Length: 566
Image: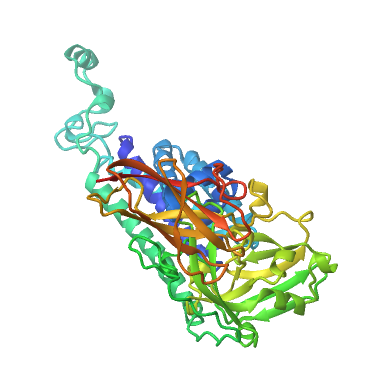
């Protein structure tokens, strides 16, 4: 029997790895995405990744960072599986060790998630066992594909009849009756020893490919079936999104004419949900059935309460507001910001119903910790959410129920705070505590516990590096500026480091929304130029030129582009 070729052994490892992965995903269906080994390992990778690596991922890949991570995990698994297949040739203990390592890593990742249950480790263990069995069976099949179809003894060594016996038997001499000089003749003639003789049969490539292909197809069918079943079982969650938003008791004020300058290249006043930025740690979007959803409010100084989704919809204090949200990971001039019309329950009123008082009124809690369905924790100052601003538990976005990607059924919206300290999606719990007693998810990872949104502005058109204008026609420079819960009172533009010149502002909707601006650069001269922008807040603050990265509490600096005129 010949040893299995390396390429075939690698294929055995890949197919066995795929079988184990498919089995694990199928076994995870009853427990939900948290039990999926791939999802769990991905989430653990996000949790353990150092802050600079996370910043790089967001800056380099944007909202595709999760796809890149999952692809990376798949590549690592494939390389490991192929290497394991090669190493396991003829060594079953290697197959067992490798499959065991994968199972333990997946089980440890699943079992240590914040919202993990005691049985969430089972899918990883099932996957490891299936991978081991599949690798052993495939390796044996590959070895069989390289064997002679008969006993391995050739006819010309046994006589014309092929018979062979110690007694000689018909058709040939006995093994012990060879001529005395036979060995010497073979030695002097240079004839190869039987072990050195090339295998006539060789490796049966077709047989091996059929076996491996069948195993791979079966694994794909199991994985596909598990995915389809998961989507089907989430049908209740989809149906629970089919409802009409309540009429707000306090509707949003009309957007004034002139709030959207409708300049080509400038982002529209309202951001469509499909274009609204999404930065979070959830590798799979939670699919929550609103009919079974509950919100628990508890903690220091709280009369514990629980709310259903229907109870929130039926409240008589529903409000509707236009609010711009921004991510702390946004670079100067970046796109992790969006404006929407939100409808929901006033957060301060709901907290007061449970007996919550802000610290300024003697309340014992200074931090509101919101918990997500996926285990995320976000800490928000109690004083801030109860200071009169339009903080809410949002139920709808731009006139429709929240999309799953943006937090259905309920998320928090707090004007003036970066999302990582306010905008908890897939909300399930609110706990009143203190900043000294509890660090929310991002704080131990190097981000500030409190983070008001910083005064910022951005040039949307022209784009950096663009060729514009010429012929004395002038150049239109335009964009947006924001200072949520403060308001923008001015925007200024500077050409080639010269004096700051005032831009024209669009009408302001509210102080909680961004504000468009435009500058008519009429004296643009041919050549290459730099264009910078800064904003002025209603409180008199002028946007700083000091450059700082997003961590720990938001980027600063002036957005500057280079353009070529003429």
